Image 1 (cartoon, rainbow, N blue to C red):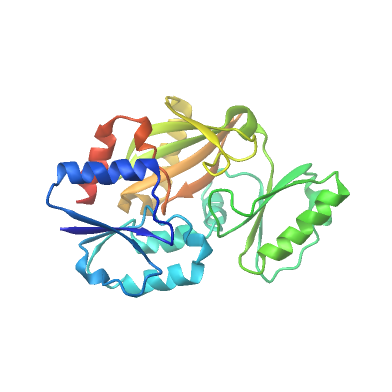
Image 2 (image 1 turned 180 degrees about the vertical axis):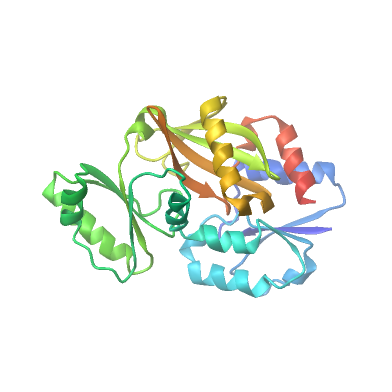
Length: 287
């Protein structure tokens, strides 16, 4: 059996992905595992039995190449993790708009199309937001995020310019900044093969975003309220039952829980923070 883990131009894998590959080789000694970039046109994808996209860090930097590659190989009779249609849906954070309509609570968000002209000062005046976060709809790891203090004219000007820059390559999300990220951090509920497995707490070091690229402290925790809400979200989104892995990122603001993001493409699953039985469950479901 041959497996490929997908990358962009990056060949260095995250710690939990290195652990995963090491464990696969330990459990299945005769297996062949390769790390390949979807940008490499010389790869014969037909020879692989399983194509795992979990390591495709930075895919958002090559959206057209990645989308075209997904559509090209979709018809191959292979196991894809996660399924390609799910990946295509999850690439664009406008999926949050769809989830909000399904009564899933997200942060107050304005969704801006690429060709849409907006006046940020007027939006802030209407919604009475003091701080806002601006992000591309196609991004990951805090890339191209901008925190704006609406009471500061210079910050507001920079934010308006930042939106214009993003619109050259992506749609835009404007969200009210919630300081509970700084106070309580962010929680990640991990589901493997359609079942809830464990909860991770991420405390940001820069008090802005809970991302490895920005610096975080990570620990496995228990919180029944957050776990129950994550399970409720999982049940509401029917396609998640077909996933090998799902990460649901949430924040707790007093008594309210908000969905931050739904990660189906290349999330860290923090295998290095939990018992190996969860990694073995992942491998068994994949093979």
